Amino acid sequence: MQSANRELPEPPYYIAVFTSRLSPNTDGYSDTAERMNRLASEQPGFLGMDSVRDGLGITVSYWRDEESIAAWRRHAEHTIARETGRQRWYDSFEVHVAEVKRRYGFRRAPEGSAEHDR
Amino acid sequence: MQSANRELPEPPYYIAVFTSRLSPNTDGYSDTAERMNRLASEQPGFLGMDSVRDGLGITVSYWRDEESIAAWRRHAEHTIARETGRQRWYDSFEVHVAEVKRRYGFRRAPEGSAEHDR
Image (cartoon, rainbow over all chains, first blue to last red; front, side):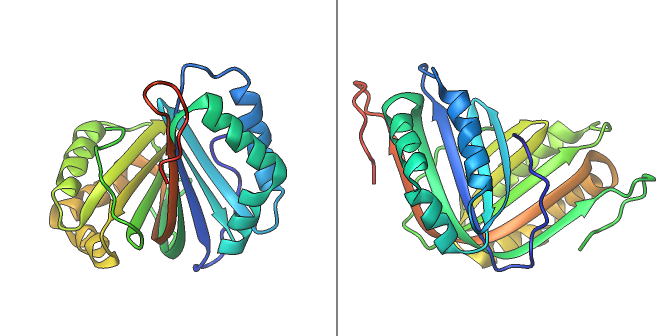
């Protein structure tokens, strides 16, 4: 997954930023990662996700509120996957939970003329 | 740049999450991106940066407070680079400015036994 189709509300909402480095032992990792991304997207309060890996991995998930993130963290299958990640897949990871204060962006207009979207 | 060496303080601090997709016209992009990363790291309040691109690009920068991010956004050379990015390099980008509430992580112990760092 790179970027889910997503329609974010106006701030405030929450993001969870997951940065990680894989260990040499990635048996079963990609299936579980895919399953976790799908499961996350079905959780109450999930708004979207952007994910990239090239050595370092960064996944940003967008959530309605802090409680939605906490509930996903407590999810039984996610808890087991995270534990396997610690035992096997990751050399290191870090999670930042943060409240979005401002968002701005830019999208190129189809005909090529630049246009601010906000 | 992937991940700067960084020693983050205890929350609260701030993050700026920059997600982007490049246009086909990337002439001069990588030199400017490198220069901007170096300049950012010299700004007051800068704490660190993680950056990955594989099609989608995600750069997370860590800052002492919201004002440090706002000052960097107003920085003259950064403003010019951003404008060139809109005109030329990016098909789209999005910036989230967010206040970090919690951080947790994991780092594998050197001998292979897993250990929580927090």
